[in-house]
Every structure is written in structure tokens, then in C-alpha cells.
Amino acid sequence: MRVAVISAEAVPYSKTGGLGDVAGALPKALKAVGVDALLVTPCYWQTKGELLWHLAVDDLWVDWKGGAYHAKAFYSEANGSPTFLIDAPSLFHRDSIYGYREDHERFAFFNRAALVLLKRIGSPPDIVHLNDWHCGFAAVELGERRRRDPYWAGTRTVFSIHNMAYQGVFGMDELPGLGFASQGSQHAFAHNGAASAMKAGLATSDVLSTVSPTYAREIQGPDEGYGLDWLLRERSGRLVGITNGVDYDEWNPETDREIVANYSAEDFSGKAECKRDLLERFGLSADPDRPLIGSVTRLTAQKGIELIMGAAGDLLASGATIISLGSGDKEYEAFWQRLRDHAPDRVGIYTGYSESLAHKIEAGADMFLMPSKFEPCGLNQMYSLRYGTVPIVRAVGGLEDTVQEFDPVSGTGNGFKFGPFRADKLSEKVYEAIFAFADKDRWSKIMRNGMTADNSWENAARKYVDLYHSTLAL
Ligand code: ADP
Ligand code: GLC
Image (cartoon, rainbow, N blue to C red; front, side, top):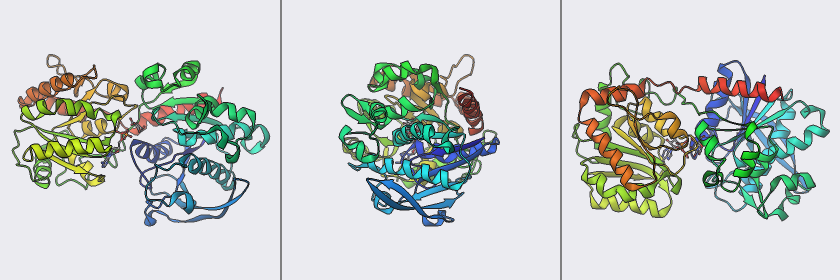
């Protein structure tokens, strides 16, 4: 089976969040279970030149805004699968990957270029696997092309939702200029008087998936459906939830080169060294018995930062040390800064993005905080589990599916979970976790339960293969 994964970001070429991790790892995992998988993603200014193996296509002409745009495509296998990187400097060589008024144009172009490229390089894919709103354009285009172009006649589309909160909304009047003039395509995009690339993807793809079973249910309701829950309910027979995997080549305390000492579920003595190193880096006193709570996240409302704000007094009163790595909304960045200024001996912050520090926090912290308002899947809690860093999470989306509440009687479970979106509920769980931390045997048990959980990509890849087969059988 031939599968082309298309994504706006993919590790190691580009990353702003979990989508990058997933899109980089999925094609590699598919290859490992015998699928002929490739990846198509943009070549950004942020993409490191050394990752580009060679120029694969020098003259990729793409119909664009009534003319022809000359793009190129580089080739690489740096993520472990064949990858084509679409090079269109005027669109992708920018200070940041997203955040421009014309993002919808940039990704509409990327989608069209990806389809031109696929047709150019070989036999048609059986499945084009699209990801998030950035790929809604290709869903519509493929739906139309396969009726007229025999090359695409047998190709089917799978559209994966990573986050319903971002929908790629723009004016309906822009559609004809982007090449979507037909009534059918306009209908596909139309949503509340505007054009929504997410809606187009959801409406026209053959099959839909999202990144955890719980989120698959949640988005069919008004709270998490962001105005499109009706469509997801309508298409619920075509919607499945497949929990993301973890790339254990990248996130594994036994082999991680970013941390000062490696360790495993059999012997986690190295973790104490990682904790000492992490505390030293932040100029905090290295007391092994004082619990260290870590956080690594985009600082947005999605991640429940307002609960951390509400619980901050309790968190400090608990005696724990807290280290936060993140950037995003200024209000949240200012909160962390204030908390650090208030208790500089107990709070460490790094405002920004650092892959290396993310690994050091996963390894060095005792507990990991993830009180998300909603969480389609979440990767950090799964990284935490593998690193023996016990997650404290809100029971939503993928957090609900991957973290099991610790039960002191049976000794089962790998973390701490609360339900209501309330700061006092978060405080309660933190206190419970700190109480458990004081009992070393009990804590070792919780850590080991997490470290031995299998969240490998192999499981997820096999589920995708089943989904692809059932899509082709439709
Ligand atoms: P989301 O995609 O919603 O941001 P995920 O948990 O799926 O959430 O994935 C987030 C990814 O981004 C993880 O790999 C995490 O380590 C990384 N990340 C988030 N913020 C930062 C940061 N400030 N520095 C380094 N890595 C970060
Ligand atoms: C999104 C979600 C996150 C998920 C990631 C990868 O960014 O917010 O929960 O893990 O995509 O699927």
C-alpha cells in the first residue's frame, strides 16, 4: 500500500507543537510495518539546510492565482521515511511558521504543490493522509480531481484532526482566486458565512480520524466541536480516534543524549542526577527530597494555564519546586515571570522554545503538570510516563486515555487525574501526588507503572493501516 502523509510541519524539518512530532514519526512507523509511506511538507526558512539531502525536482510548476508559480522540492530521509520538502521561498521563508494573515493562501499553495509533486514522482498513492486545517484544501482538490483525472481515480483521503480550535478561516470571496470556483468546492468550505479549511477537510475527506478516542467523542459535542460538532456527528460513522504514539528513538531515558545520566525502569538512579542537573541549571537548590514539578508547553488557554494561575499559592505552599518552559500568550508569560520573581528560590522559568531543555525537564522533574482545558492527544504526558515523571492531568481527550489514576490499594495506575476545570481540583491532585511522593516505595511503583507503559508508534501505525484498508474498501 502506498501512503502519502501531508503535513504543514514535521520533525526534524519543522515543529511548533505535537503535530510536528506526529507527522515526522508516523511515516517512519508506517514504513516499519510494511507500508510504502512518504511525507510531503514545506521547506521553511527554519528547516536546517543540512537536513536537505538533494534537490529532487527543480521545476515544479504550480497553477497559482491565474499564473504558474515556480517551486522546487528537496528530498530527505532525515525523519526515517522518504520526504519531499516543497520549496517556495516567498511563502515559507518567514520569521515564523504560522501567524500570517495569508496563512490560508500559503497552505492552499502547499497543498496544490504537494499534489503536483505526487503526480510527478510516481504511481498514485492509495491513501493521501491529510492533517489539520492546513490540508483541507487538498481534500477538496482531490475530491474533484479524481473525477476527471485517471491518475487520482483510485486514491482515497484520510483527514486527521489534531486540534479543532484552529480552523483556517478566511473570506468566501477569496476562494475563486485560490482556485476553488466551483459550486461544490464553495459549498465544502462554507461555514457561518466564511470559508473554513477545517470544515472543507471534514466535509470532503473519505474518512476522518482524530488523535485519541476520547477526543473523537468530545468533538461531537458543542464544547469541543468549535461550531463543527454537527458535521462530526453527521459523519460519526466515518470518524475514529487513534491515540498518537511516542517516538522512542527520540524520547527514551535509556538513550537520550540531552540528559546528564541515562536510566531505565529497572534502574532509575540516573534520574536523581538529572534532577540535580536541572535544578542547578535554574539556580535552584538541589534538595532531592523536595518534589520538583515540571511544565513544558505552548502557553495558550488550551493548556489550562489559568488553573495553574489559580492554584499558584497552593503550589508554593505545598513545598514543591516548579520549573516551567514555555512561550505564547503574553498574559501567561507575565504570570510565570511574576511567580518566579515572587519565589525565585522555588520557581525556575525559561520563556522560549528549547528542545534540549524539554528533554531535561522530562528527565529531571518528579511530576509533570498538564491541566489542559482540552487536549486532543497530548504528547508530553506520554513522554513524562516514559521518563518516570508522574503526570498530573485533567481527565480530557488523550490525557484521559493515556493516564490512569493511581490506586494505592491495588498499586495500579501511573498518574493523577482530576475532572472539573477548577484550580482547587488541581491543587487537590498536586497535594495527593506530593503525599504519595513522600512514600518512596509507593512512588517507585507509580513511576515504574508509567515507564513500562507501551505507547509506541507501532501500535498506532497498525491501527492506521487497518483504517487505510477499511477506507479503500468503502
Ligand atoms: P500541542 O501540540 O498542543 O502543543 P503536545 O503535547 O501534543 O501539545 O505536543 C507539544 C510538543 O511541543 C512536545 O513535543 C513538547 O515537548 C513541545 N514543546 C511545547 N512547548 C515547547 C517549548 N517551549 N520548548 C520546547 N518544546 C516545546
Ligand atoms: C495538537 C494537539 C495535541 C496533540 C497534537 C498532535 O496540537 O493540541 O493534543 O497531541 O496535536 O496530534
